[in-house]
Amino acid sequence: MNKIREALPESIITIDDFSSKHYEHGGHGAHIQVIVYDKIFNKKSLPEQHKIIYKILSKELSNGELHALRIKTGSLTNE
Amino acid sequence: MNKRLKKHIDELVNKNKVFLFMKGTPNEPKCGFSAKAVSILNNTGVEFGYFNVLENQEVREGIKEYGNWPTIPQIYFKGNLIGGCDILMELEENKELKKTLELE
Image (tube, rainbow over all chains, first blue to last red):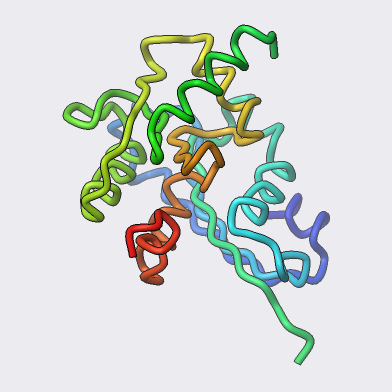
């Protein structure tokens, strides 16, 4: 959450941690859903939008801290 | 990524119009996200090729670099990455998936 906030200071962020529902996996790593709205996503394709989030969280994804990450992104307008 | 591996993945993603890198097989997915991707693709009726990354560690790691995408499943259309499970779900919810896959 803080990492996304640092990288995208003006975004609207919602984070849901549903790790506990996935105990059947054996409890490795967190299962997180992030919903992020930011102007940076305007006019970007969905894969480009998700890649921005993946990049921000690349360390946590590669070291196993984050086992599963669900992403939803959307653009924001100035209005 | 070495040239041989890149060529191998190039060939895979262009083998079928729609191509899925997944854990397990469509009949026996080994991960909830791969299972979800299969079910969404099946719902569209589209024919798709697949590769089980659990059977090939080199492709499993290589596809992350190839797609510049850190997770599996990955769905390709005409050789281009559409995204992972979340994007498929979103396209389906927004009724955009069939258009994206040129089914309508």
